[in-house]
Image 1 (tube, rainbow, N blue to C red):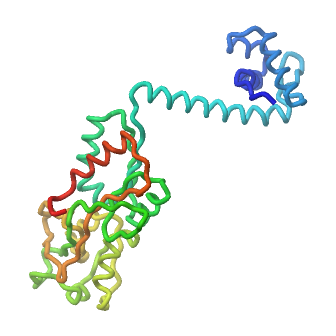
Image 2 (spheres, helix red, strand yellow; image 1 turned 135 degrees about the vertical axis):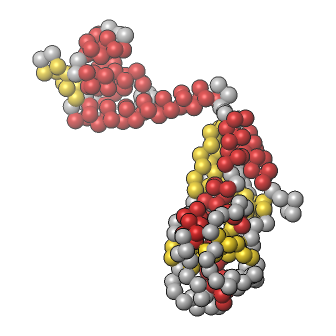
Image 3 (cartoon, rainbow, N blue to C red; image 1 turned 180 degrees about the vertical axis):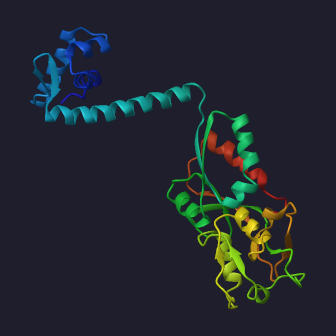
Length: 295
């Protein structure tokens, strides 16, 4: 059987939507006999009546409605294919899908994204905020091309590039009495604690750090670090956050190092077998500019 004729499918859709062979012919810039011939050829192909006339009005039969629905999907796919080819013809380099922790999205990635948009407008960037564990899964499944994550991450399927040796720090309300020079798990156990959401990498690092002490009360969960800082400044409790979130002084908050120290290194991950592309090379190179000389 010969391949479907796209012109015939379009004629069917127009006849059904307009309810008229003559109106469809005008829209398609064809004669009415030409449109009628296209419909007859489609009906001959399937051995089914697709359109029936009631007076001057044309109506789709059940098979006609079913075929028209598929014809619309085919038309959309053809339009998407045409658009993709036009983008390449006009210099489009491709699409890069990036996952990122919320901390990296708030404090480290924006200048890179801004520069990429200015210098490489032909690259389409799709950025999604998600916890490290979700980014790892999506890079392995090829849903993401690159991801900024918090170490530790272990997978033989991934290429892992450490970028910055960040550390967790304690932040406390300035009104807290007798704040020690270094904050220990035993001290945290006596304080009201605010933590980032449970799926976040920082939450896991803090939970592990506190695993040998019993907290006086359950931590208060707050979704994002900026909201955590607001809660601490308001006196709701202390928290533990990446030091990059505290590079600028915040009123009513005291910052202290942890003892023992807890690294929360930022890293770039990608699938080891990911095929390279011009767009991916450019975006990867830009993100790698975050890499510290310590690595």
